[in-house]
Length: 381
Length: 132
Image 1: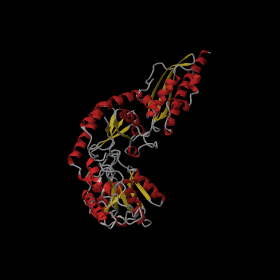
Image 2: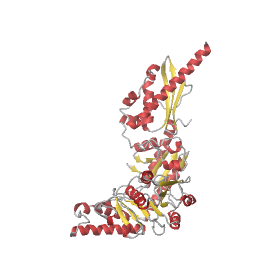
Image 3: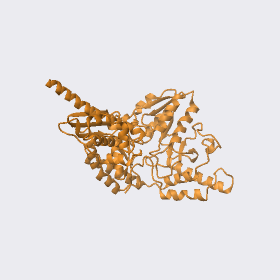
Image 4: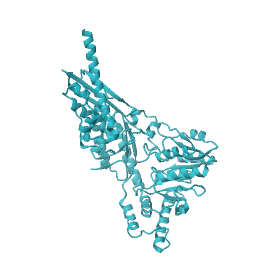
């Protein structure tokens, strides 16, 4: 039995999504820019899909621009706005716990003359709104703060951040790659100017995402070419991908979210009860419905992951040894975990396919694994 | 696991040999720190310049656990001289290869062993000095 609990990394594509995509590979493969009938059919489905995505964000369809995914959307938002605003304004405010797609883009922009403020977060991963306000300078043109964190699942209060940005007339971008369709996203209510979203975290295909850009916002394109997406994002539209993306949104059910949350709670609660010296990372209340990130004292994360894998259970670690770069997690560090705790963490991320039986299997094998690894640990005397 | 481990590494990782602690060890070595992510400990008992008993404990990834497990098996019953001269390459070969990025795990294991032997030799030296 394979138990896949790494859905924050990526998800299985839903059968309905695959079926919706197939005709756009096999029969309706025309280029949406072509003037013939086949082309105009492609254009129609493109615009229909755009509407579905706009609906999910409460935006206008013409404010949705298709991209290759979350990383491109974040790159475009930051670089495109920097180019439009620099050298007049050069200051960006972000957080220490953003995804690398944002952080590495910020590092790049620093070399180009940008000044970046990286906001701290508290022990649960929340930014401090006062610190945000204080960071704003006359040179600030952008606040970029992720909606939900990919490692610890903490969901920021976008509405309050949006209010501050609106008052100070600063552009507000949010990376919603993890939260899209799982948490409430309303660009009007939350005063969002740009939002990065993607398809493969919601049982849609990989290689497709979008950037919502409020119609009043001026931005330079990242990708130049044939003038697709109103000249803002060139490249032949990925129609099958876009159709799949829209279908993935259409089939999301409230009950799936509820089920994920219930199973997530069961997983967290029982691990904390059954296994001594364990600790939940992130917020208990305001966390993504499918995320559980737990530190197991004195045991190394990759070792836990390896033992789980041996039982057919696939998870992710924030540990130093897991990633091929041997780099510790900047997120776990930012919420104040010690070096040891950072190296002792496991992220379980659920999907709508996760069953109670699977969670019970994890709860059955995990205590034994931790017991064995603690017997192996020189930290346990 | 993200990295491609040999079957031998996985076996030593999942079913390590000689792990735990011993009472009355003649020498103990510990290497590593929480910051670098791996901590290894080895204890030995020596008789007639041979490693009679050896135990290890490791906080670390699959490669770290497998390296320490295989090292203890390679040196158990062997001369101290052999143990001291064990190389990273020999350990990696015995494990049927280690990913390049994990080679430091075998190196750390060897350092831990050498530290345990050094600890034994220093204690022996002190005892000899006392006698004289």
